Amino acid sequence: MIDRDAAVPLYHQIYLQLRDEILTGQRPHGSSLPTEQELSDIYAVSRITARRVLGELAQQNFVERKRRLGTRVIFQSPSKPMEANIDQAVDSLLAFGRRTTVTVIEVASELPSVTVAAALKIPPNEQVLRAVRVRSMDGEPLGYIVSYVPAALGDVLTDTALSRTPILKLLEEAGHKAEHAEQTISAMQADPVISQALSIEPRSALLRIGRTSYDRDYKPFLLTFAHYRADKFTIRLDLQPQGGTVTPTLTQDAPGKA
Image 1: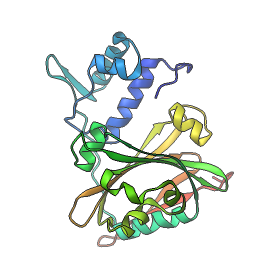
Image 2: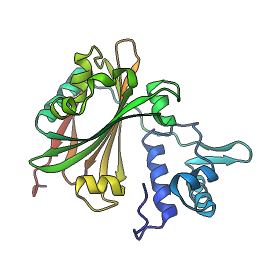
Image 3: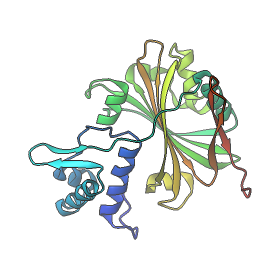
């Protein structure tokens, strides 16, 4: 999503979106980017603008462009994954959910993007259910959350159920318990849709959490992208001695406090 009324040039807005998708792993190493024509169609911009976007990504060593082969991601994160106890992490997420309220924006079936299909390990022509919610605390919007599940699991994710119960709990009750998860945490800027939903200025800082949850057969069943206001939300890691665990703890900073 781009803001045509913003002072930031269109090419740079598109560049930032694609860069964020690469940095957060939505576009993994080796994956292909849209062509100039496809970018032009997706964002309704000129081919010149699309070419500048891809050129900027290549100049910053996020992608590599080759004639007849297209543009592919060459960026690889230098960070190494940390291990944490998933039961403690899920308990923390559920506790956070109980302290907040949810407004369901949309629940709809659609064909997955390349990123979603790859994360859920499903064919690109297989429908997924997309659920969009805004999580609030004390009446103030805190997070914009988008989740995807295979269409076969969609029956349990109704508007009413999602407004009352965390999505992980609903899926667990349906027989899909998270036994393993992969999570990335990164920073990004709010696009017009998210900024409006969270009542913040466009391009405001966000903490973005991407998470893929797997069942006991190591099959992915839930992909979530949560976008939290950086001025209201932090994540604390309780670091234990060797042999202990790293426990993710979600906390909200009280307004007016450092």
